[in-house]
Image: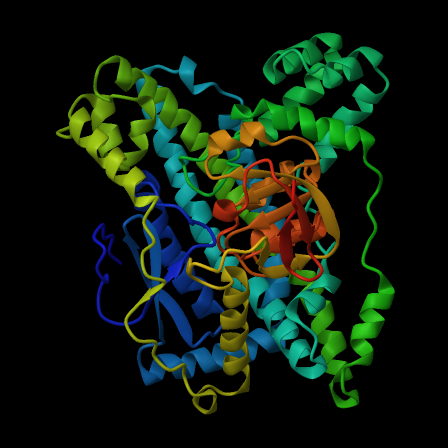
Length: 543
């Protein structure tokens, strides 16, 4: 596993660029923490499920993540994987992982909520260093956990969707549409918001504050707290639980909900006015099932039950294992960066994200050999990479293992994972398309919506997004669950029908088109657009 900053191939073999999480350059601070943890988690996760593939090599080229996949090394290892895959299907390992997740989730939550309730700006230097170190540890543990249990979604969902498409001729989007609403925690913050909304509904003064368009969102939240002790307590409970989760991407350079109070106001207002959602229309399942050959109906029914049980687990867990600890770490690191900038050790507090964790600790103890000028140089280099478009891949693709050597179960596991990953990533690359008022992508969440486009390329752009707008972004993270209910539709440059944006849009019944490649470049900010999530296109309307 190597981190590179040149534009050359990281090494021999086939390296594929992964853009679904990091469509813009990754920060140095994150890459130092993330890459070793994803390496360990992926190896363990794929090995547990008996996959013939293991993602063992990761690299960063000009800030972009690349992955080199290869088969299990020796014949002995492959034989062991074949045995494991047989046991995976016999014992339905994903069921055990799904059942274990609530306990794991609660353990992470108990550790994180203590940090959420403490303001790092009030800590002395020793306590702040300890806090940063502890959060780095929790973050890397969380990344490892996420990738260890990621196959628990990939295998049953990928296996069933892939086979159902083959049996019925239906599109991936048609098949996946019957899985939404399968995970009770997809909304995440909604139960806590609902408790707060109940208190505000009965208070005319509180509702007036929500509708106030003159005062800033931060002032309005402060005024809400003054309405009553009950509203203050319930708002604080929401802030403690959700305010420090990264919501504008996957990097420590991205913003948290605490930094975007307008979205807290919007989500409260939306929840007060919203109506209960509907589940999957049973007729849709019946119509899909009617297209399945008779001799495959039992496999279809069993596979649907297993896919429903596991669908969305990896999307749900990343909010606790990744986005929350990373957001808390961002808050603590920025508190330290303010002090370093005041001492002249950083030119700007945000420059801290281009240090490594070790360099940051040395800076805080006064023993660092890296100077502010060098860190500033890295920042400018990192920013320059944003306009680059490194190759979608390096090297020649190697053939997949012969299914005949793998056995039925191992071949199913491997094919399911490859299929799922492909549907997460969508079509790679940024190829220039002919100028046209219509952009095409993947039909991610059905329905049509027409509204004002708001282009989001960096965290600062979120300040321009209002309720009912069409959110146009490079990609989305699972923490967008606090944003998506307030927008009318979603369009992303990256991703496929199983990416985070697609899963969340289906849960909230918001029309979505993903993988539109250059939507953030070709759609003018503020333009009137029609989003057709049923057919996978976005039309820029004439003024």
